[in-house]
Image (cartoon, rainbow, N blue to C red; front, side, top):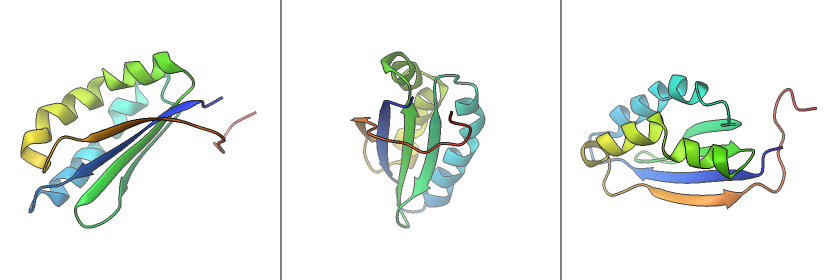
Length: 102
């Protein structure tokens, strides 16, 4: 069962909105390689505000993701793409609906 998550908000620098959107889309194969990332969504909330929501079965999965390839790539590109550092909130998942859940 999905128990934990992350809610990350990102604010793109002026003129970097499409580049940030592309970065997030291109991150999907990196997340696909993470067996303990139950769900992952890259979202756009406004012209310049983006986010990531991801979910995990346990703390080990969440910590592996936080030290994984997407996090490394995001931090390596943050100064170029983002107004400020990402806001990363650790959250608890109260209920979920995912495909192939039994």
